[in-house]
Amino acid sequence: MAPTLDGAAAPVDKGLPEATLSRLPVYLRALTALADAGTATCSSDALATASGVTGAKVRKDLSHLGSYGTRGVGYDVSYLRHQIAREIGLTQDWAVVVAGIGNLGHALANYSGFRSRGFRVVALLDADPQRHGEEIGGLRVRPFDDLERVVAEHGVSIAVVATPAAAAQEVADRMVAAGITSILNFAPAVLAVPDGVDVRKVDLSTELQILAYHEQRKAPSSRAGAPVGTGGRGEESA
Image 1 (tube, rainbow, N blue to C red):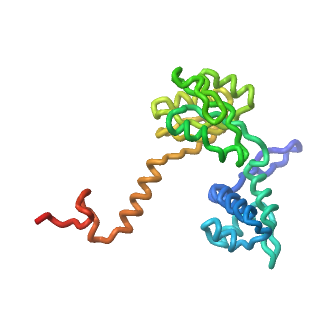
Image 2: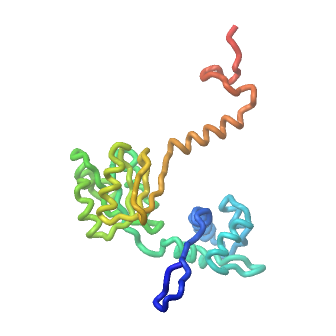
Image 3: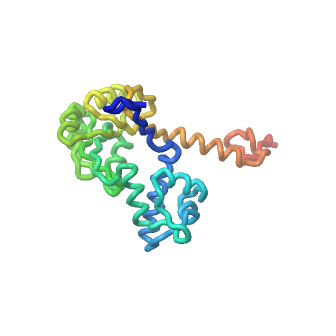
């Protein structure tokens, strides 16, 4: 508990449960699709179906935000969409810098969905002089040494790391020193950052490996352990 000015203990804001926070963007996407389809109100069960979760989970998650539903009517789609966007900070414009303009960084720089979701890429940075000046998505690639200047000019607090693994930690250290406090990490490396800096890791190969595990479990037992190239029959050739 943190002390107040009069010496009494003040409650500490612990924020939303992590599981709830991870589902809010899913609800937001579903509500946006409903709004685009002309739907004015929806029930928790309808929102659950559109989001791929249960109605009970939707109701519990939204209870953390306040009471936005009307019994017998459901949720006002437009209003609930605004409240969720406000809760997760999407009612303001977030400046973002992308470091590492290889194949993945190039794709991220061209992604048009950032701006529609409240994020504005203000700079593309790379250490390779051969990439400098290349135009991607309306921005020219700049030297990574411009990082501090970009952060100061645009008030950047969020950055994307799309560098090779060997460079990721050094890049993250420079970002933190420049004042960046949130990092989305696409590099195949675990980043060590000080307290107060948030890192979200996106590991595409890990996700594919998890899918491979589930696919393997779906296969008939007769196929288990079949060598590659046998067509899954697992039989010796005649």
